[in-house]
Length: 216
Image (cartoon, one colour):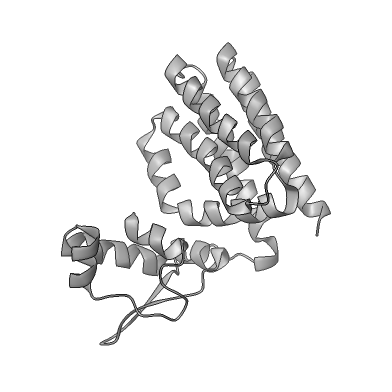
């Protein structure tokens, strides 16, 4: 979603009013229906506030608030934000890589290798945002390879939350552990061993949870 990407990149600052629907249509090259649907989703995620008769305004993003908006029964204490997201990831991503293991092609493996090399190239920098994007891209690519449309759709819906949490994880822990496990995950996928892939992913998320807990 172009509009979401621009909001996350700070094209408009917190409190700033977005251009009109017609201006956004012209700028982004999409229909008014598409713009309205995007605004509605971004409002649900907590990125925008729509004021009746006043337009759409940028809100300060809170992953806790966004998650709460996705389901009225989910209540997240902001101090546990990252742990809560990681617990969700441990369940979903273990199952996802279990789907990937028997179907990953040589081209899929090469794409993961390419993302891994990108992460390595960024590892000695202080560019936490780019490091997090590369880390997030690796896991998103696994969801794509799994080929399950529901997993992909849910991933896209909460993408903002996952990407935001990834930046904080990289800031706290760096990239060493992610690189170590990503290497192991790729090698496990090459064997086609579903159980090994699942246990490696579970260990990856579990160690991340423990290290975050120890930092707090």
